[in-house]
Length: 228
Image (tube, rainbow, N blue to C red; front, side, top):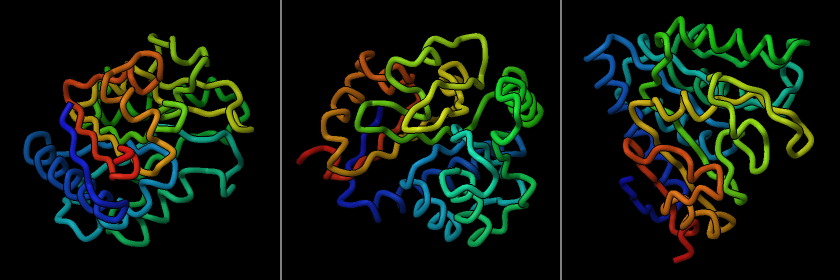
């Protein structure tokens, strides 16, 4: 895994936007489209706004969610609210090419299967993402792959439903589809990541993030996250 340490969150977001833009141009030149999946949390918001200033072939960009809280449409807990606003307010991406996880459906398991089919329709079967963006929680979780949750052991589905975590169940991409991505980009910031950061670098399987493939991974972190 390649590692880059940036001074602060602002420079981290800008560097991540540059990585995404370069990957998008490469994918569109090679395959005619760029399919990325974005994790929840606050770290992507500035990154996505910065992405609007980059040279991106927006007409050929498709954006999926890596994870989402099961909550009503428009709920401020929803990652999609921030994903949509960050992109549509700043970048000329076709709105129909931002794919929301259907977490408001009454049957969550059926909704997970539906999203997996949507992903296959855009990126093949099995689906291969051009880029998967991941964050890291203080407890070492990534996406909504949560310590101790049975979702960690799901290998027969690309999309699954978790148990309750911080008051909400989640829909999440699982290890198989994340690890198939052509590029995995970690974005890690903040002093609360100091304990999880070295475990991620060491591919420590005791944390969920440590079980993500490092072969095609780039880890971008700010100095606070490294503890230095």
